[in-house]
Length: 431
Ligand code: 2PG
Ligand code: MG
Image 1: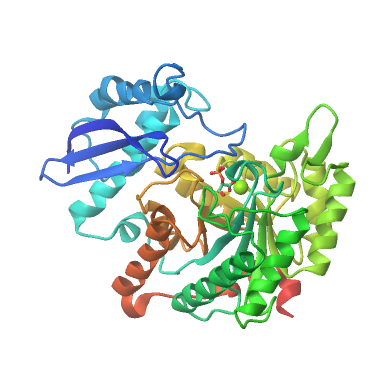
Image 2: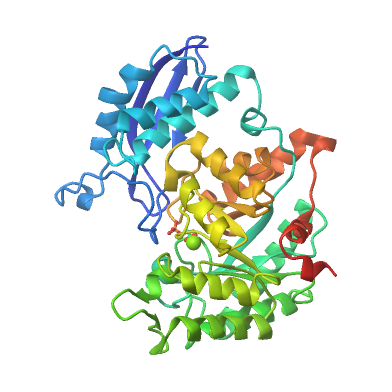
């Protein structure tokens, strides 16, 4: 099935920032789009998101150069190609770019076409996207943000995400119910305290706390108020996004909210203490992307009891993931399509992660769109976990709802193991 036309244009993400969408049409008239998300706490090792940088146009954020690259460079090389050869298409774009971080064409330009092609191919075959991408049938266990922080909430907490994992859920429907109840219980508590100020970038409550630990207390209270047992029915997951807290010059981690600074060892000890006192099942980016000794320290202390996820440290890049596996710095990898820039490389990153016995966590970005590609990616690969921000706002709910639709279409073939997924990496937990 040949690609008959490709076009790209500027649309806007959930923060109202410009982003790129591509449309691919096939010789049989099938059409599909791919829309690229955008991060705020982006890792320095991510593939390059090409923006125009002209302050007079969309405050420098427009993506017209990336669009021109799709039209002038990608389109001529890809028109007439077989849309079912995703690997070949992606490799062609990687070669056309020719740089390690896709800085010539822009990872956003390449990914828009890569996603649109996959979506069009699935449609042409009359299959849902997940079935086209892979044979998986495992519904993911969501990580759902309750309060936002860091770069997503003007640094009102230093820790970026305080999330909930419905560890007691026996079905995806039950995850939705537990999450719904806890999310709204947290809102009720904040209202009572006069601290209900709407939501941060990913739909989690806007934080107004005196310390980072206060948000942990809120989560425990919300779980209890909703009628659940913390640690059994629902547990806490954190994205510390520690690269944003780390000062390369001094080698210290800083909590600005509390006017505190920590050495690597002190920061690791703080996280260990939190894990001892709160039902924390997962921590993402506990250390900065350059502080691999810190990562090893955290993993040695907690890697048997807590999921340790690398985001900024791996950036969905198999070379970096392989290095992390060799050095044993984590047991899970956050997977973001636009950190690496093609569907094929993202699938590879998931495969490398799984082959090592680690867990992939498919993730959205803080700047999202209505595209629900990642819900399909999570199911297709049996990733087992999905992180999409909170339980409000349509760019987030689009993904949670898409999993509901996928479950319906899979009917009896859908599987859900919930927190059983952690048995693979946390043997100590399942005794
Ligand atoms: C992260 C993501 C999502 P951003 O750090 O994991 O929470 O944020 O897209 O801003 O990098
Ligand atoms: Mg992160």
